[in-house]
Image 1: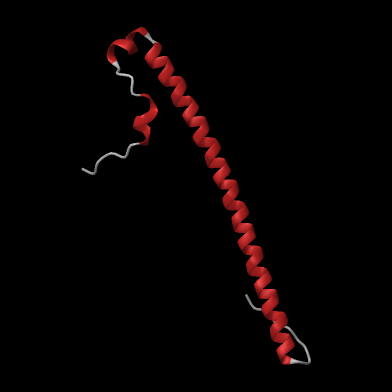
Image 2: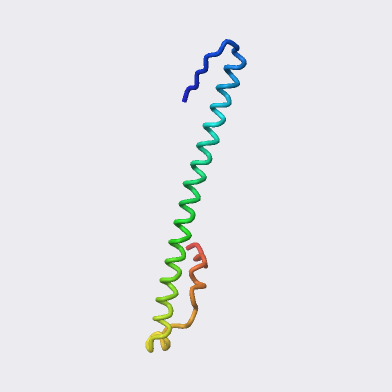
Length: 86
């Protein structure tokens, strides 16, 4: 990007160009922050949806006659554990 400012005083021209550059950088940062926040909100909604689906499936599994006999009740706690490296 190139910013050119014509002014009779070179110092004033530099200050104007610097201010324009600074405002552009601030605008870009705000834009990125907004997009990042939108992505975070989308991901939070996806996590909540998947958590609900997992709870529903666990409920069906643990409340079924065959599920009680063969599956120990662990809940979704195992979803938060990181497997040990191989």
